[in-house]
Image (cartoon, rainbow, N blue to C red; front, side, top):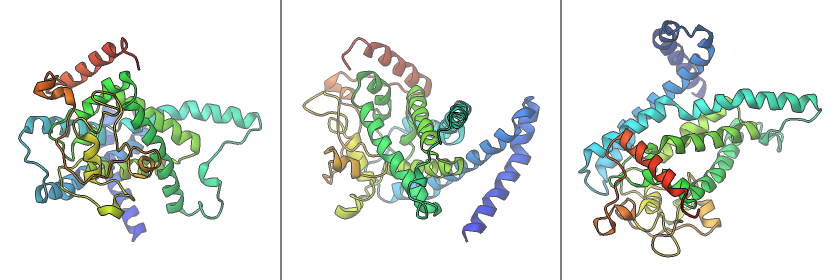
Length: 325
């Protein structure tokens, strides 16, 4: 069954490449990039599959068990644009392969010096040789690093200036996961690309990690009244658990009103929130957003379209340099 799926994907990738991508690459005069273009076609195909899952799968959950009615369709359409940019534009893919030449150079110098390069899944020979065990191991490591990167986005004023765009969506839906400032995305994507190179993640494993993470995060942001129960929510982050992270005045504040911090920073697993005492399992579905968006708090504007939001994010970033991080 797995072989059949793999063969079907390979055939679809080849067909998409030959009929669509290759003619465009030749037409633009980039014939020297055909191999990279073929790899990018695989990512594009995975992106199309993810969009189909959103529309046909998670979208059904939102319609069946909505937390709230969607009234701001314009804001959701902007989030759809973000999703298409990230799932089809492949920010992480670009960063992954941008890091590759530099890392290959470093690895070559290490070998010349007689120092071996390192692979995490080689630490447990025989067990980590099993493909799915190796993949799970890498997923856990990526999730641990993701927890701390996310927590730092809520800790430092300059980083929150960018990340607050993600929290400013008052109508959170399955499309809201990719509502991020592009500079914020570059920082996160670079960190994960470097991590992948450091611990020896193969390109195919990196694709699998990215796709699994993105789909589960789309589910987490869904406008769906779904929890996994007292036991299940301690194994995997649910839409309810993550909505708590987006709750006004709760998910991005701690130690009193207006102080950066918050709860529920985990990407896929709640384990790190539990371990580092940032978990909040209260079974509630609160309104989402940032406190200063409320009329009584000044009705701060985070932008009403893609470019407006990106510009205001940079403005907040420059203004943050005068604050204490």
